[in-house]
Length: 228
Image (cartoon, rainbow, N blue to C red; front, side, top):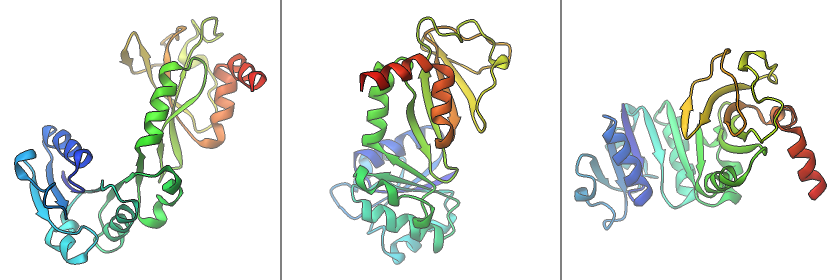
């Protein structure tokens, strides 16, 4: 897979290293000469240019890439690049970094964004996930599919403890994709039994999140509403 990453700061370089380690081709683009230092990620290709300019993207052969990652620290630049990647170069997949959560509403298909990654929102979700038991925590949102990955940790005394996955009538458009138990991920089968303390990872839609919360941990939801 060929991936073009705009923004060679710490975020872009970290993404590049991970992709290179997984055997992918990576081109890093940045207009800041201080960031464009091939010695930092020697396995990647480098281009000193403004990723919002068509000439630069043509030089990068963006149309030959499988994924375009807009990882700069400027939300406007990330939106412009995503739009150009989709409309001018037909890139199959675009991933855009959201720096300011207030701008998150713009990062959708109308700007050519397939997946928006908001670091502040992701960090908040991970913090909530670490301390919340029984609460539904949104981990990740898939922009194009209008679906989310959410997590619920089964509280002590949960009526689901001991129940088989296949015996539960999950809400519409909701799939249990993983169970994390004793810090190890498990691929759930219909015969697997859930246990108190299990972290359940679901793919669902925003419309079903409340129903999923009420199904898995209704007491926790009611307790939180009373406390508020």
